[in-house]
Length: 420
Image (cartoon, rainbow, N blue to C red):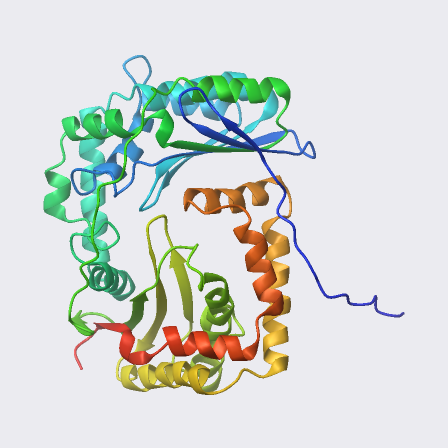
């Protein structure tokens, strides 16, 4: 038998969704495909940390609106949703709260109005609120002994500042200070039409589209702007935090970068993949395969609606921290000083082009890609620019980006683990 020929991927197109601007200011993006009789509807409210007047109120509001109204309890609503084979999942990020609904198209009329009843008139019952607070505090206490979690918290705090929405963290005191009035205020101020974006994918018939629009237009008119929060990074560039009972150390390095629409994002996306963005990356090869210092190491360029950062993460055994950090710095400096070999660059190109194909494979994946762009206030042509940059960027351009963004002295380093 002869193997089929291999053809390079020369382009990947992001399907154009149908966009609807609704009467109350909400935005709806529709990606129709009738392969399966299922609908995925994701609704995001710009009601995250940038809008909250009290720490943790956005998270609490997003959990507890699903706990019922004055007319129906959360348990009864969940039972009815389950009866129709639907799945309702909460969405909570630094920028947004909301939900994702999976439902058979024929049962959308039975399920969607109930979901919006919950969204529009949550009762925030005291018993469920108390339970949420106790569970959140219990999780905080568990996380206090986890090097990886503490490393993330300390790093983002150092990069953005202790009062910045991307930098501050939940506390026991903050959770205990939450009141039902706080949740009602946050809900009333921010669960509004102009703060809402929705993404419907799947078998969206004309009747289903009409129903989705009708339910979205039940949201009150109006919108809110995020509070201005200035970056206030900590001066410390090296932070050590001791966890006496930890069996390993978490190493975290990071620096401020910017939004997805930053002119260097596309190139940094490729460069980060080479550094630590996939299993064959340089960090994984050197620290795991060659030296056996860690089970997992990766890097990323994380972007949100109002900013972003470059992030490196690894866990190592006690006593191996210095060797691992030096190895990481060596890889950063190699990218600054040496040109990437053509065969390595071509392998990464092929890997990323395949990833882009997966991002538009089917209506659900396409909707998720569009949601990522829209929720970060990024124009849809960004996807084509990312593909084109991946296809054409040169080793010289990547070295220039490394010299600009990957200098070890520009990174904040956090090490969390047992005493030396």
